Image (cartoon, rainbow, N blue to C red; front, side, top):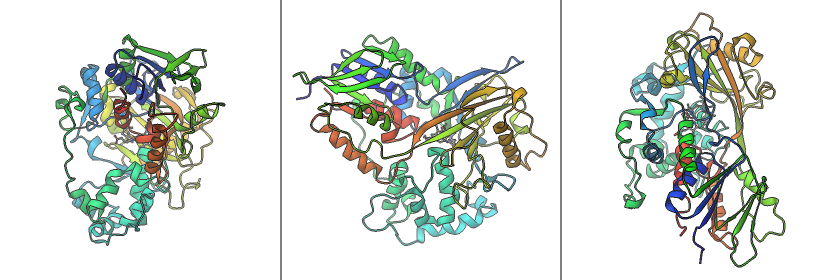
Length: 517
Ligand SMILES: C=Cc1c2[nH]c(c1C)Cc1[nH]c(c(CCC(=O)O)c1C)Cc1[nH]c(c(C)c1CCC(=O)O)Cc1[nH]c(c(C)c1C=C)C2
């Protein structure tokens, strides 16, 4: 029989680790909960920074990780309620341009952005008409064409089957750039977009018919599992996305603060896990040794660190009675360089109102320095939805994202994390400004002003690319963790396992250790 969960060790204090510690410390109020992170600052990829602009009394809030949240993630609404963050919310309505207007930049050489049509009438007037019309109108009438017996495929192959290769490249690859910053020809459709895979089943082979057909309603969750959202749900009516006055770090900082004042929780920051072994004595506890010399005896473990990091940790163990965990190094991780720019001019003087734009995969694939030399994936118009974070609407902030599947660009290495004012503009910023100028033409025909502030952050290996077959591999991994040696007393969660969004990570932390006693 499993021992009671009396000593819990949680490896990694990003969103999944913080959420795990928060929920487990409430579920097991008499257990000792240890939360370990190699960094001194907790929160993982969430990084919000308020910057005072030089020579002015103005400030802006810049994000280098996730910047907005969606109201459908109940587990986040629950944290907002439990941590009392409601008065710090800023919301963007579904009727705002940020929610309604999205753009594509089709080719680097050509000026301008193309609006993604949001209604059938808009399609008829759009320059994307030729790519969209036949693909979308024809899909419901196309014969079912999923090859028999396949259990997964790439997102590109799925979209190509149903809509044709040009539609898959233009829309599919751009969507994947904006979420996974990867090549849609590598990404598993079932792991990344399960809703679409299931809709094709429901529509008897047609994705669009399946999306229009309602899902069979699942029975409501047992009462103890109901999300404690309080009145937060009501404040999300008509909201498309939201954040906080001081950015997404509000959530991670509030979790950290709450854990710091919880008597049964110890946070070990700035120290990494040196080894993970299992005692050979009859108590069979795990030993988590930290690089600062501390050893945590643990009855149960939650690993939220990237899967390759867990693999390195376990492969250091010699003479261990712990079985190896499969598939930890199967998926690659992509890196994204995030460039925040701030202009001393209102939004309308810089770019059209809207969410921002994405750039599809070039026609000839990625290693094409002529078509997209900087490897730009897209640009977010932050001020369209997040201007209440800043001290003035006379400022415009936007974020250019580079990297992902493009060959690593020559600028990122020496500038991995840097920021400055316009007095010393490096060539990457100059090149990005030229790209923006061409993207915003003819909306803005006058030269763009120099940014009053810019900041570059290179997020190395920040997002996993789930390769086809990911869900089956994760099931196999879970079977091993339930078996001899681990005995269901370790759970491996986080972005590498079950979803990369903030909501997925928080939800995984909420569910972890469900069967522990
Ligand atoms: C660091 C860059 C990131 C890129 N994708 C993600 C990050 C953190 C993760 C991500 N982005 C989105 C989702 C879906 C969210 C959901 O469905 O709940 C995820 C998991 C969508 C998204 N993409 C962009 C924005 C502003 C959003 C809204 C959510 C968020 O704030 O992250 C823009 C964008 N993200 C990336 C690129 C290249 C890009 C380009 C415009 C990569």
